[in-house]
Image (cartoon, rainbow, N blue to C red; front, side, top):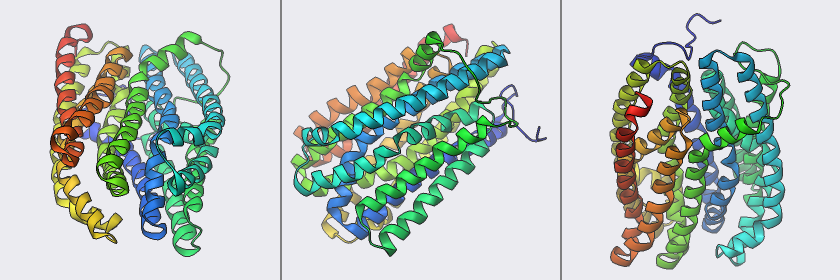
Length: 445
């Protein structure tokens, strides 16, 4: 075992906590960056309509792919807790069962997605060229959906396997493949929107298959793929634990669809394109919070399983301080980078760029608040309390945002749409704080 390897059983000071979570943070940032690269090449080399098509259909694709996050976060919490109890044989059986089940779900969802993509896109309001471009992009991506599900799942399970750095290497490799192929297919060969989808699908295949190969062979992590028996209770517990992450991702996708409908009404195709830029950049910023939360979750689960209450309290206190620092930094970055980032994506259209810059200066205040709720939901998932975790995610991403995006535009017009997320995040942060206080005696953190 490597001399400097950090184990779940260790005591975590600030330095060790950051060292352990940083690979996961960088991994999710890099995942977001290479998704953004897709948008950059599509927008600048194929035009505004294909760019709008990618942003229009992406929420639906994310709904299907986020099943991997459910199994990864929920299963990772259960596996790490089992490791904390000391039953490594059971932990490996759970690991194998959860990976195999996620792969099967990915195949089923890919088939259903390909069959129903057109009627769903039409139902969401796409017509003409926007509809056809959305279908082309979506169906190519769906071919790689099983590997996309596995990629998301392993991004969470690498930390439970005490291999966050290896997870970062896999993600970087997949991302570089996507970036290089995007540049080659779109900028050099001018193969258009289908080639952007193909580049993404190939990178997702890489991100899903490499971990399978690694864990199927003998390795120096505590986890390995092997034989397992069906355990309905464990699968149900993993799904319940991860329901908040599933709910969060599904809700964000549903809310994105609602945003698109409202933006089409108030600003037309320009509004959807501007919102696409916000979502791309938001993915990178939110990846900091998600990465930290995913990285700390197995540590929390392990110490909860071993009933180490002082360490749980220490992790909770340190996490709140670190999330607060990250949040202030994200807000400052959002305000400073609004213009250059907008220029990067839509600088070819002054009207669209002005709209995007203005939207970003309002929207970026959500970064000051969102990290606390993201971490709070993950914290309860790690404690194997999927109900409370799901409640935070459900209220944050579905109830509060849907209500705000429907009501605020009636008062403030287009600016109300950009401000809706800020208001929703404020309400979610208050809710998370109340639940953390209310559950403190139960979990002794």
